[in-house]
Amino acid sequence: MKEKLQNIKNEAIQKLNASDSLTKLNDVRVAILGKKGELTTIMKSMKELLPEERPAFGQLINEVRAEIEQKLEEAKSALETKELELRLKNEVIDVTLPAQKNMVGHRHPNTIALEEVERIFIGMGYEVVEGPEVELDYYNFEALNIPANHPAKDEQDTFYINNDIVLRTQTSPVQVRVMEEGKLPIRVIAPGRVFRSDEVDATHSPSFHQIEGLVIDKYITFADLKGTLAEFVRELFGADTKVKFRPHHFPFTEPSAEVDMSCFKCGGKGCRFCKGSGWIEILGCGMVHPKVLKMSGIDPEEYSGFAFGVGLERIALLKYEIDDMRLLYENDSRFLKQF
Image 1: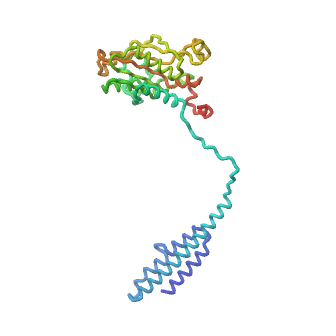
Image 2: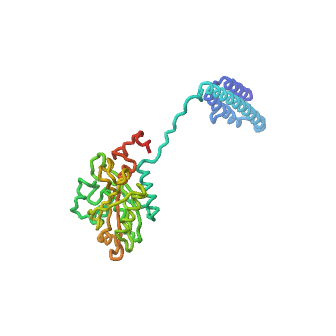
Image 3: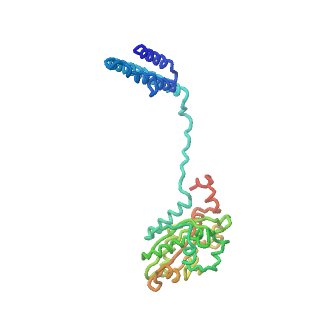
C-alpha cells in the first residue's frame, strides 16, 4: 500500500508539472484530492490494515497530501503569473486616446418647471399633495358640481374604465379628497398627470400635467385669490409681470375667471410671442362653489375658499419659449440637452 501511495504522489506531481492551464490544474486536484480522488480512496482502505499499522500509514498519507498540495499551490501561482503577463502583453491601453464621455442625464423641462412652481407655493405656506390617476367618477365630476349630462363627461372628452371609473381629467379630485378629510384650514397644490381624449398636436396631448391649488379658510375673498396669483406670476416670470382677470365659467367655482399675464418678452407692448396683444393666457381660477364645499362636508356659511389650475406644459412652453408641446415627449437628446 505504501508503494501505491508513492505512485500516486509521483503521478500527481508529474501531472501538475505538465498542466499548462488553471483548468487542467483543477482537474488534477479533483482527481487526486477530491471526494472520489485517488488519495481519498486509499485513505478509506486503511480499515484493511492492522490497528498497529494505521498510525504510521495515516502519517504517511498526510505527508503525501501536504506535498501534493504544496506542489499544487506552486503550480497555480506560476500559471496565474504567466496568465497575467500574457494579458498585460495583449491588453495594451493607449492613454493618449480621448476618454469616452459619460452621458449623464438631467432634469426634464417639465420637472424643472414643476420644482420652481412648488418652491413658490411652499414659500407661501402651501402643502404639495397627490392623488390617484385612475379616479372614481364621483370625485372627478359629481363632487365638483359637474352633472351627469355635462359635455365633459362625454366619451369623446374622457377615458372611461367603466361607468364609475375614469382616468382623471384634472387634479381637482385631489382637492375634494383633501376637503373630505375635514382638516381646516387648507392650503394645498396638487400637481399630477391627467388624461383627456385629445388629438396630438402642437398644443394638445391625451396625457399631460396640471397643477391645481386650493385654499379654504374663514373670510377668504376674491382679493386673496388675486393677490396670490399676482405674486405667483411675478415670481415665475419676473417682478414687472402684471395680471388681469376675465370673467369665465367653471362648474366648481363661482365667480370664475381666466387669468392673463402681461407678455414677459415685450412688457405688454405687443410682439410675435403674445401675437401682438401684449397679454398671454396663463390659468383659470375662481371662488370654490358653495355646493362643492357642502358636498365635501364644509359649511359654506362659515368657510370660503378659492381654487386655480394651470397646465405644467403651458408653463414650460412659455418659460422656455418652446413652440411645440410634442418636443417635451419625443425624447430627442438634441432638444433636451438645451436644459
